[in-house]
Length: 371
Picture (cartoon, rainbow, N blue to C red):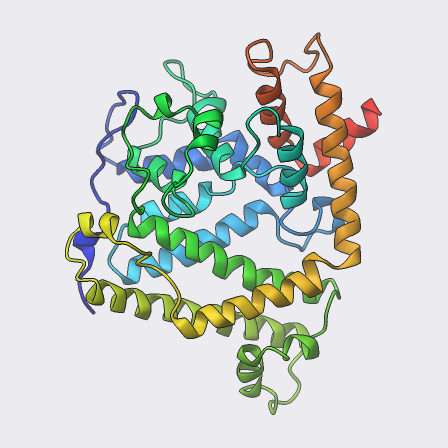
């Protein structure tokens, strides 16, 4: 195994606010702990992944998804001799900015904010860790390391259009600490691809559990059909055990592909130090061509059979109605009866902050109370 430790991020350039160092924990372990202990992270346990949180106890929530992403990211990072603490930290934090009711909630909240700079869950994560969480005497936010913030800002790659970042975060708030037009570190790229691996596979498992599609339909994808062939002649395998084994094998194959392809990309692009990672013209951490095709097939299957399913769409429409109602009701409330932060300074953004922080359950209950 090649030693890629020199390509990882192990030293921090600091934080926006001076903070005592710890001889017991690295800066990235401290970032992880601050995220885990935040109110925003706790609320993820009652936020939709695909199924509304009230639908059942065994479906993924944003919290269980984030934990699963972190586990995958740690495995990849550790094998490559990178900073698995940083990869875990970014994975645990990446969905903090999600609204109730998943992407349906984000879509309608973005529509509500169309004349006020829009809404973006990735940038909302940044707002949470920089401004909204209030746990410390000397500063707002969690005062995370620059490296963690950089990974969160560029979760999906370099920032090409700065307009939303300017409106939602404010470029001045970043104090020229980040090179927004360059790729993020390998740990951040790993967190991003681990996110894809987790939701593709676990959405399939949840979709099968919910009866939105059958195993036979899933096996129309050759990737899963090939995995299934290894087990089809084994006797007395319970269906749920078989499904779990197929998902395990799928994740394993994807992780191995990422590791091998990343090693090849590092060699091919002559990446010898951390600066080369940032300056590279394309992602270093990505699927091979074959797995990209498989990833596309899986996404297409999930779109057709799960995300666009009438039962899921019905729930999404209900969530959209609730978020739209709450935004209009709270925005028109001049007395700020709900003690919304910064309500008198930027009403629209403060209402969006308040709604995005709600759990599914809280949003449903507040809707019933106010309608």
